[in-house]
Length: 166
Image 1: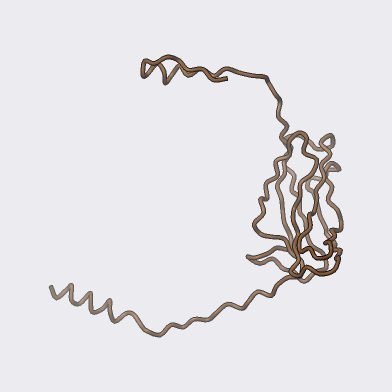
Image 2: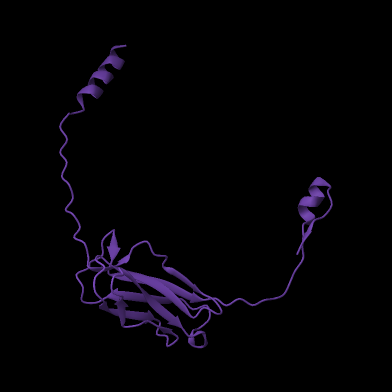
């Protein structure tokens, strides 16, 4: 019994009412940025000629042109990214459109696409990004026609009629 009382007394004396909390420095808002909540996997399929990534600005004011730098690795003439993006007056977002020429993209090859904002006061934080990196792959589908699926395994276990799906 004294062992339990000793453990309880030690447990209650280990806590303190003093809390030393130091708040983190606030993150300064960026004037132009990418969202960090972006899907970085691009599956390029037949008929897909572009992919939009949204760029944001903190204040929707007059028309603004922002410089963009980009790279594609391995080099590919079939993937083009503009060097500037224009915010319309009164808008706080604009699309950065990546264009695809499927005749110049190698099938089933992994491409790394990097898009960065140039010359703005933005750094990568948990809230927004200056640079985004995408993994892209061209995966065309070949239509083989219709098929019929027949479930012989489960049907035979339960002695029921075989089901077919088209």
